Length: 85
Image (cartoon, rainbow, N blue to C red):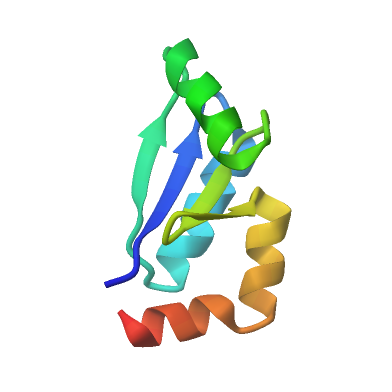
């Protein structure tokens, strides 16, 4: 089964709308809040190459942040993901 992980921090408006988009599409995800975890942030940079939030990872592959998640949704990716889950 596929898995979506959303790495977040706070306060983060883009994190909030990314999670809202996933919820609206009925897509389950795991949230990992790195607000008070500098070691976790360093690991996220190693995993994704990015230092911004949110970071969305699907099946271990980074798709990027909120704008990339929206593009993935517009291309039908979230719909396909939800159907396969």
